[in-house]
Length: 290
Image 1 (cartoon, rainbow, N blue to C red):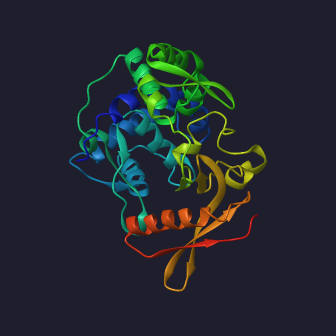
Image 2: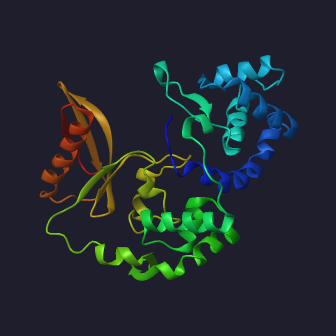
């Protein structure tokens, strides 16, 4: 069991928001409301007792139980998504080959106490500002996916906890406790290599503060893809990928703005730290500006 204090109330809050949004697609895939409800109840039986099944095996179990979920196409993904948004299943451990398995959420994460909707909205807004501030109400709405009315209710409940700060994109807010810890002018560069779909690039409605619009397609080319990126003093200046060089793991950095020579040492430190975390040797490969 993986204990957690948050997954339950977050699913309780967001599940009812997202289930209706995917209904049209479910119907197109032959997943009407009755079939989805039957699938949820059947999954609770199929996965009980700590069982973990891949999606294909779970759908096979549903069909054996008399719930005719189409075994091909997007139907299996959408019926599992429906059950996840209902708080019934979640991802378990990956099996051989990295194929994910699914387990019962309450067996995996433990019991949770329900929260009043207003309390849940306020807490989600508080978590967003804590993780992504300076932020705005529009950022919170975009990040959470909540309807404007609910996002506004959550934000309004925490306004007394926030402090306004000036940014290049206009006023934004941070928690009052964070004001004194906002970064000051640094004596040296700060460089971070963040992974694909990193939260730093997902927490705001607009990415202008950290990614120049003319370079946006280098990192966010479309189709829902967000490439691994290099942040220098909080701004995206390059993307990176894994390469191979001799017996080392080469981290290939592809800048799209000029990088000052002094930055190389800082990038090498960051690349070495990735190697330390992975337990392997790594090296920096800096290619010419794109």
